[in-house]
Amino acid sequence: MPPILGCIADDVTGASDLASALTVGGMRTQLWFGEHQELKDVDAVDAVVIALKTRSLPKEQAVAQSLKALRVLQNCGVTQFLFKYCSTFDSTDEGNIGPVAEALMEALATPYTLFCPATPENGRTVYCGHLFVKGKLLNRCGMENHPLNPMKASDLTLVLQRQSQYRVGLIPHNVVACGPAAIEKEIDVNLSQQKRLLVIDSINDADLQVIADVAAELPLVTSGSGLGLKLPRSYVKVGKASSLRCQAAPPSASGNALVLAGSCSEATRKQVKSWPSEWPSLCLDVAALVRGDLTVDVVVNWAKMQLPNSHALIFSSSPPEQVESLQSQLGIERTAAAIEETMGCLARALVADGLRKLIVAGGETAGAVVRALGATRFRIGPAIAPGVPWMETIDDPALAIALKSGNFGDDHFFRSALEMLP
Ligand SMILES: Nc1ncnc2c1ncn2[C@@H]1O[C@H](COP(=O)(O)OP(=O)(O)OP(=O)(O)O)[C@@H](O)[C@H]1O
Ligand SMILES: O=C(O)[C@@H](O)C(=O)CO
Image 1 (cartoon, rainbow, N blue to C red):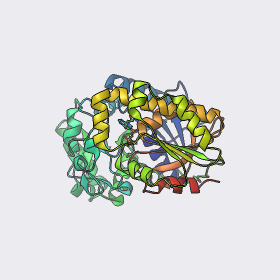
Image 2: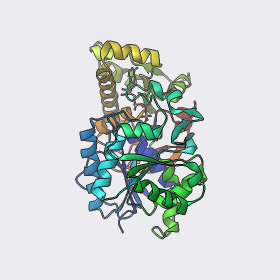
Image 3: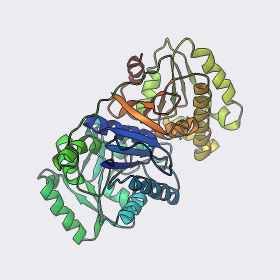
């Protein structure tokens, strides 16, 4: 039997978030990282998530990679697809959410799709088309300071319209509250007005379940991970899945862990601040790194000294004023590239040295690390916090790895994660 659902995620922490949601919902889920010609051994899984790193790429490249992932999934016999983006709709006026969604719609010859970033479990809700993060409008929650895609507006119909060719419509909450049939009627109204990209309100789990009941019949839906928690039940309801039978076992790795934090999001900065004082930590001197005055070897040697005795943290996370000042002196892309490359090199060198437990905070950072490790397939383990599972690489070396979205987890996330493993 081919997997029921094929997912294309625009970053790797987002992919692990979705894979965790589908697993918690009961679907046997496998995560693949990067571009592949084909997927193997997916007969025994219900869902496959392909993690790309397309969120901040030029839109032509993001579209090309997403279409390639679609074909790879289609070649496995998958007929239903989910395009996963961030629950904070991370994107710019150029893309990439609109352009990728439109390209997938064309490839699947589907006249419309839904946009459902809501993930109430992590405080993301959509009302009247406006995205809220823990009750604050998207452009007033800290996301307005994001280093790569500052979100300066919260009305998703406007945000999406700026990056799309098709017209954008809204399915409001009063319709969602009336159930699947009302949603389907509203879709027809929007289509009669040539509105093909439909943002859908959702403020709680019950709304999401109703939306999942509609989405379970669609060839393509686009969303955050919230929908992933509800889709498994809907697939059972419509007879696409017979039962939900996933059991997520923790990874078996032992030894001390390295934490690499490249996210500057508020939650990660708090987690870095709360790093237990008995464990060592190193703040990267980003300016020295970009100028070449600080080398990776020096940092690797520091970590090699610590890891035999203790868990260790290496971070570049900084407050917005510092990020802005560095970016204006050194350039946004140059700064990000130097940090991401360093994080990747650190992970590769230390895994080669025997490290078997790794936590990475930040989507772009995690993408760079996973790419540097050459890891391709992951089994999904238990959730550490909503949206962040422990995972285990399927191919050697067996590595316990957690990829934490920047804004996820409470202040003591790192300690809680490490206490879950032997
Ligand atoms: N001190 C810093 N100054 C400037 N840029 C930084 C600094 N530290 C990290 N960065 C860059 O900021 C970006 C942070 O993005 P990343 O996706 O890793 O985190 P995030 O956006 O908080 O996480 P997520 O996408 O999971 O929400 C990376 O490209 C990283 O290299
Ligand atoms: O949806 C989210 O918030 C996360 O899965 C994510 O994509 C962060 O990069």
